[in-house]
Length: 119
Image (cartoon, rainbow, N blue to C red; front, top):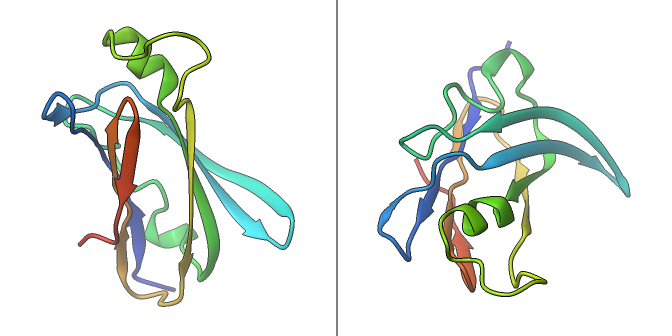
C-alpha cells in the first residue's frame, strides 16, 4: 500500500481569493487513452474536501487534471465575450513517487493561469 496522495486547489489571482465552485476532473493517461478516476468541486477555500486521489487509489503514472473554469469566470463577472479565452484548463503531470504528497494547484485569472508542484 502506498502512502502518497494528490491534492489541488484553485486561487483566483485577479480577485486575490480562493475560487469556490469549480468542477475538477482527474484522468489517468495511458498513451492516447484517458480514464476518468475522480471528480470534485472546490469549496469556499478553493480546495477539494478530500484528496482528489487518496492513498488507497494512488499509483505512479501520468495524470491530467481538467479545471472547468469557464462557469466560474462567468459567475464572477470575469468571463468577457464568448468564446471564452479560458474555459477548460488541462494540466498533465507525472507522479513517480508512490509515497509522496503531490499538490497541483491552479492559479487562475480570466486571461492566464499557472501551476506548480506544491507541498
